[in-house]
Length: 421
Ligand SMILES: C=C(OP(=O)(O)O)C(=O)O
Ligand SMILES: [Mg+2]
Image 1: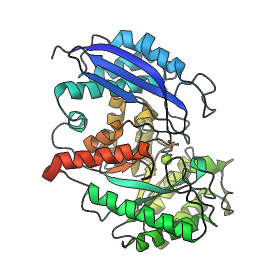
Image 2 (image 1 turned 180 degrees about the horizontal axis):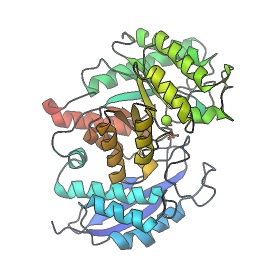
Image 3 (image 1 turned 30 degrees about the vertical axis):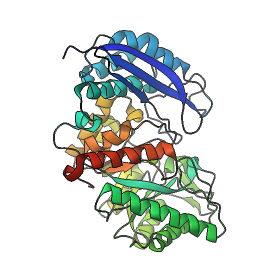
């Protein structure tokens, strides 16, 4: 128990879009070494903790992270060196105090989370525990059903799709390994369908295909066709989950479905479109179906759809207990997307998960569109035990790193492995 943090050092690395991001390396006095690499979003919520960049933080791409790296090396490291690594809550509180702002804009959520995760990884290693066991304690471990992204649009691809993510969920699979088999077979079936129909099989930022289709509806039609082509039953074996990321096409109070040519819609008309889709397609979850500031719209949206499907808040909630509490009170959603870098410490992310549980909400642990090979979030998802993860497609290694880590955890747990919601 006398092990202490010995060194903390950050460096710039590159994410899956070739944009600089932060990696932190931390060592303990017992010789343990750990690293954490921080991802980066493109369709970011305006209330997210600040990802500190050297240039304009709103200009995505090409902006350095040297300020965040310096903040780790010059400000955070001297404050945490000498502390015991298992004191996660105290270390996270200390960094929040050092920053002193409501949204971590001084030191940067990328700097703070890098240290927060590296501390947890080191503490787990030093204790001789797998990360998921260290983070989750006794009895919670549960392998998640993956939401696997197979068609990309919005800010993640210049396809014809207004909606950012069309995902499949192997809800009928008996294990995580089987879920991956179902999903990869459907991904290959979709690829051959797209080819046969003369579409490109190029992929977007999260590895889903990015074709030029006639409409957003055609995307759902193609997915249902691919599920059947691979030999699965739509709705039974495989369901559909959507992340329209509607903040990205909301302008002056109107939802503009310009790419697909489906015109302008009010929030009620968007909810009505989803209602018709739910009747037509096996959709079980919609994330950010409306925009982040459309709180009134979300109340109606959840009143109309929330009995039938999971309504997930991402940009609306930004993994922040303040917004989650408001949404619980106003019945704006019935689930939260959980992204560690939206809030910026491991402790605050766990608090967001606890609040969801207390309200009887479900939650989905999520990657970002700009990712690294880091697999922290896979262990985190198992530890939190919510039974759902969203980490992209099955053809890009920064996404596969998470899926492959989950396969490893399932095999390590053997008969003790629990799977799904
Ligand atoms: C993963 C997402 O995208 P990004 O990381 O670009 O916010 C999302 O919107 O859920
Ligand atoms: Mg989202």
